[in-house]
Image 1 (cartoon, one colour):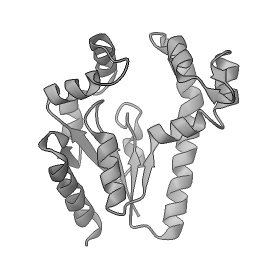
Image 2 (image 1 turned 45 degrees about the vertical axis):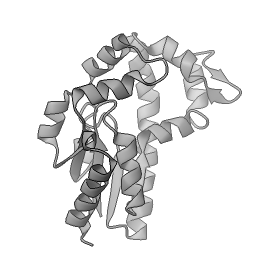
Image 3 (image 1 turned 120 degrees about the vertical axis):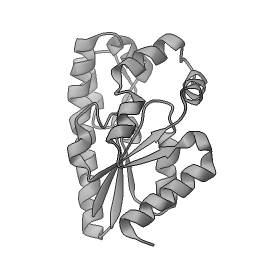
Image 4 (image 1 turned 180 degrees about the horizontal axis):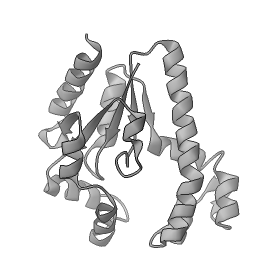
Length: 194
């Protein structure tokens, strides 16, 4: 089974590209979706113990939690120490299930693949990219986003040019949905045929 890591900087179209792999019949493990699920399940008591008052009705209040950890390096590290192992365990279970099922190819959608040392967990890496102006427009269209937040997020991410250099495959989502879908199909075909 080939494990393909999918990554890209904020606003580059990673989530849309992940859906294209799913449409192409490739099982995808989505780290962001896993965190959402954990914030309504296994992570709740751990987050509440570490950050009292950040959960409501059995779920993590993401806005309250963000207010506690953003801009606080120690708090963010404390949160990552809770969440990252849970996401990793979920991904490991996903890999085991698909290996048993005989899947020839799976995708691990890992937003910070290079930043968190995730390269060793995958066989190949696909990076999604887009021109800076498209990225900026996509991100600033998100609720609650500002130029300052975007600058802060980008400062913590490996630069797009460096990600592209380290990638086995690059998909430019700035070329439109049809071009991205064709690139996904070409990658799947190259890795597993068909």
